[in-house]
Length: 180
Image (tube, rainbow, N blue to C red):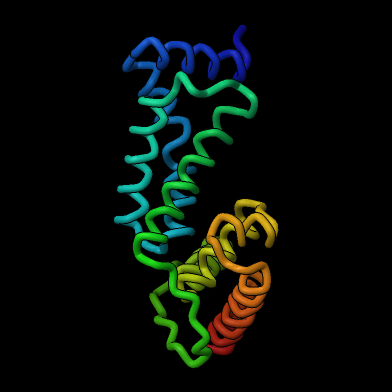
C-alpha cells in the first residue's frame, strides 16, 4: 500500500516526465490551498486565481528544479507567496497610516461557526493592503518580522507597526460586528 509521501513522489516523478495526469493530480492536491494563500495576500479573488494559475505554470515548467530539500507543498507555497508578493510590488503595496478608513460590511451566513470564520475572513480582506499582507505573512504563513521586512523590502519596524495596526483594526471590526 502506498503512503501519501510515496504517492506524491510518484506524481512528482510523473510530472517531471511530462505526464499530464500526474500534473493534474498535483494541481488538484494543492490548488485550493494556494488559491487561499493568494486570496489572503492579494485580497482579491480574481488576482488570486490568476496568480495561482501562474504559480502552477511555473511549478510544472520548473519541476526539475525541485530538489526535495523541503516538501513539495512547501516548495509550491513558496512559489505562490513569491508570485503574490511580486504582484503586489508591481501594484506597490500601500502601507496606510490613515486609521479612519471605512471598512465595508457584507451579509453573513447563519451557522455560528461558519459565520465566525466568514466574519474573520471578511474582516481580514477589508484591511488596508499593507496591513493585510503583513498579517497574512505573520499569522498564516509563519514568517517573522525580519523575514517579512526582507520579502517586502521594508523596515522591521514598519512590519511590526503594520501588524499592530492590523490587529487594532480587526479588534474594532469584531467589536463592531458583536455590538450590531
